[in-house]
Structure formats: structure tokens, C-alpha cells
Amino acid sequence: MLRLRILLLAVTVMCVTELASQAQGTTSVHKFTDLDFGAGNTEGTLVVSLNIDKGLGQKRKIIIGFGGRFNAYLGKNQYFVTAPAKLTSGSTGPGVIFKENIEANMDTFLVKSAQLNSLNLFLTLGYNLSERLMVRFNIDLIGFSFGKSVTGNYINGTQGKMEGASPTSFNLLLISDNDRGSLNSQFFARYLLSEKWGIKGGIQFLFSEYTTDTEVQQFPEPNDRFRNKSLLFSAGVSFKL
Image (cartoon, rainbow, N blue to C red; front, top):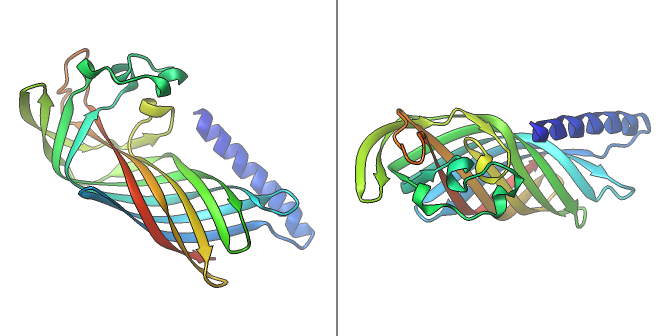
């Protein structure tokens, strides 16, 4: 919940500073709506987002912002692996990001045709290199997922069985494998071709997660959450509101 508090604080600061700048006849808040396509090996995304950026400093080059986005993920023959951090690394503290997976605890859920959708709020950090060229990093904080139920192949070593699953409904950014649900992050550059229109390119790092109908994994403890991590090349268009 710390990340959510940071987001709320950032929004409050932006609102107060924007009111002050409007009182002085200036504005440092800019809004963009973006359409992005991500592509990887037999997988891809469609992302639609609303971005609200606040310029900081005398030259307004440092950016903090927030927004909301819709992520649609499609994948063919994708392997979703054991998700909870207490199983993947044996702990849940901040240091989990530096720990290797415990292979003996990692089971697999193979989905032939994966399709998950999510609606999330995100936080943005960035820098404006010029009036036309800007770089941004954003990351989903909280939201929910939805999509059709699937039947996949649960694999434990050489053993396997068919099992039903649905997208994990609640999404929350914590730390590494402590994260829950489907969360996207982007690093990209945007270039404005005109006053309103721009193009963008970069990468996406996407967590997608299914919850099986039963706790199909039993060792080292019962588990029903399985995650796929995707690194995708991304390109899209921007419209300045």
C-alpha cells in the first residue's frame, strides 16, 4: 500500500501546484492519450492510456505524473510459472528482488491461447529533452483484470494434468514477485511531429497472471497463482490533449 500512498501524495502535489500556476497565468501540466502495440515471441499487447504529466523545476523538464491504462495481452503457447514470492524465493521482504528462484518450488501452467485484460492506474517519471523530444518511465500501481477462462496444462516435473484458470482479478504493485495480478511498465521516448501528434517507441515489461480453479500446486505448499513475464518491444502514437 506504500506505492498507493506515494501516488496519492503525487496527485495532491500536482493539484496544488497546478492551481498555483493557473493563478499566475501559466500551466505546467500536459495530457496525452497514447495507443501502443507491443510485440514479443508469439505474444503481444494493445495498450490505450491517458497520461497526465506535471513539469517540475524552473524549466519544467523533470516530469512526475500519473494516469490510467487498458492493457490487452495475447499469447500463444505461453508458460506461466509459480507466482508467489514466498514460493519462488522463500521470502517476501524487500530483498526478494535480488534472490534467485528456488527451482524445486517452481511449477508451470501452459496456456495454448492466453488472453488477459487489465485496467490499472500508473505512476510516471520522466524528462523533457526538448519541447518535442521526451523520455518516460511508467509503472502500474493498482487495478483489476478480466478475461475469458482458459484450460491449461499444469506441469510438475514429468507429471501433468489439465486445469481451468481465470485472470487474477486484483492487481497490486509491491516488490518483484510480491506483485499480484497483471501489471505493465514502459520505458519509451516520445517525439512530437506537430503541436498535437507524436510517435513513440520503447519497451514494455509485463506481468500477466492466472489463478487456477483449484490449488493445483501442493509442494511446498498449496498454490493457485501462476505468472508470465514478458519483455516486449513497443511502438505507438500520441495525441496531446
